[in-house]
Length: 299
Image 1: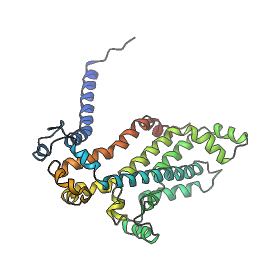
Image 2 (image 1 turned 180 degrees about the vertical axis):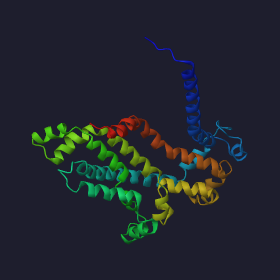
Image 3 (image 1 turned 120 degrees about the vertical axis):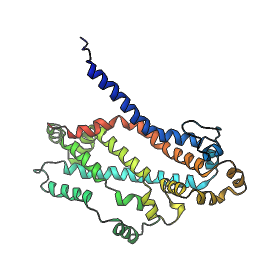
């Protein structure tokens, strides 16, 4: 039997749909504008005529980017950062969350260590002490300076820990009765049933490493070592300097300068920088709801 919606509920559904569509449009509009600017003619962009559709469609900005080496060098550094940082994050998250998920009977100091990690969320050493530690350990101008200071994301660790605590005790006891130790139980029982949560924190780590730019600005002394987002930040903040420093274009520089502007080139680079996240997100997005909510389910 179909229940007929009342008039107030119909009005609510319409208003709710319109509101959500407006929110979605506000979120998507900057990306559409960015894409339109990257494919538009330089004159139309400088005149402020481009909104959501390209004017004077051209791909010269993308051709300009593919002829410069600094963008791809910074892209490789970001890929290297993600390739090193994400597995390291996951390793430390898992080997920290698993013992903390045990009961006080199995791990008496569980609460002490849990509070130790929680305190690091509320209080940290600050920028200058952290920089001094990185410099003293010789990590300046190295990709390790981008990876090691945040090697253990405490919030993600707490999410995984809460999920592991919510697992049925009978499941783990069955593994122990079959003779499995802690390592076997973690690898063969806990991790397979924790995949939604692991996928969620993996996406958190990928996005965090890919979008971070400030640490690259602090810990890298040379632009050749900048990760992609730090390099793009310099392009956006000082576009004229960026155009003048493209000496690797040699004889083609005057040709490109007559066809592109700092805005069209910056838009094209920012759109290309978003592509890896846009490719990864749809595959991991489905785990978001279950990965976060299941950790809060109690017996």
